Amino acid sequence: MIAFVRRIVLAVTALVLLAVPALAAERAPVILVSIDGFRADYALRGLTPTLAGLAAEGAWAPDGMAPSFPVNTFPNHYTLITGLRPDHHGLTDNTVYDAARPGVKFSMGARDQVQDAFWWDGGEPVWVTAEQKGLRAFTMYWPGSEAAIHGVRPSQWFVYDEKDPAFARVDRVLAWLDLPADQRPNFMTLYFEEVDTQGHWTSPNGARLNEALGNVDAALARLVAGLKARGLYDRVNLVVVADHGMAETSPDRVVFLDDLAPIAEVTPVTLGTVSGLIARTPGAEAALVGKHPHVECWRKGELPARFHYGTHDRIPPIICLPETGWVFTSREWYARRPLTGPAGSHGYDPEDPAMRALFVAHGPAFGPGVRLPVFDNVSVYPLLMKLLGLAPRPNDGDPAATAPALR
Image (cartoon, rainbow, N blue to C red; front, side, top):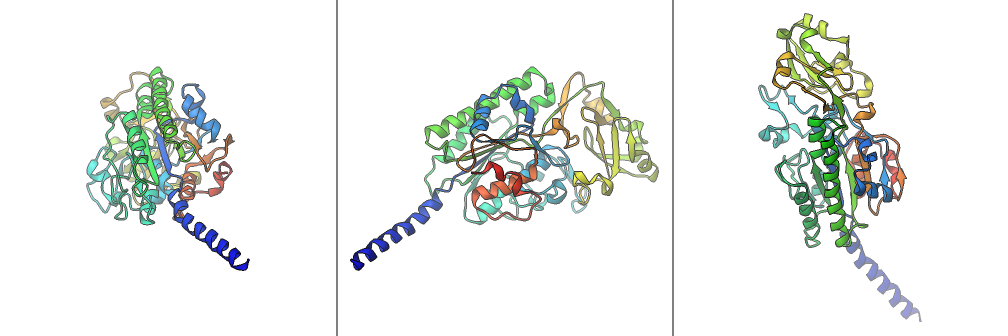
């Protein structure tokens, strides 16, 4: 009898040991989706039924997620994937200069710079850690994914192509999930820009913006249908986010830099909403710093503490922030691209509800019908690392912010 029991115990132990690698191989894949410029309250317009279904069955932040300052595309996408504030990861705005690269400008359209790890090495994205730990990461158009950050690229990545149809992007992700188990990615990213584009050109309240919401929701519906067809809908963790919201602008709400200081004594680094300036004379600096009608300017080390911004070497000496809905520019810049009617922009105070971003999560890790209060977007990173079973790198996020969403 004792020998029989011993054989049973040994057999069960062997089965358990055999199951461990299988369970590791069955780690739930994570798909991180960014809908650029999807303001949190867009989800309340009744135009995105697929997104509403994911929210009903999973976790949702109805009042949105607070972006990091400055509220622009590249800084916040890199914050989402590293858990670091822009002041810490170094993508301090969409346009950046660095004294170590004199005369070189980093911008979203500068392909050679976007693919240069020099600009990105201040943070470690999820995909870098994942690859270093033996997981596979495939990325589609996420800012930073075209560079070999810390010498590491995702196993698959693509050069950004805004003309690539949304359905084609979805089909590519689904094809990734059809790969053999030893080639299938553990972490994937997917990116859509249409909502942001229409928000800028036609305002967040325009008919074309609403059409863009429907188009992106249709792409999500294709993704959901593909997951269901593969029996993966409840076996994949899907996290849908945005980088920022959007506010309506108007030709009636423009502040000109020229009216605050002698324009010949100021070099603009960025203009539009949040603006970085270099004052070349003490008089120009004194004229700029302080409160003005509809805009306020600070020396970089004197910004409000809640912005968590102002220490990085890449930040210009003076930062100006207009009121939400106002545009801060120079007459020369404005002449090249004047506002002729309602349009949209971001880059305003991150505490303004108009700047809040979408957050929805669905999958086996998330409880159904969870509603989260507003939280800072730096906390998405520790959530992603937890989903992947990876130890997070030092970051500015708070795991407690999203903990109630988890089963």
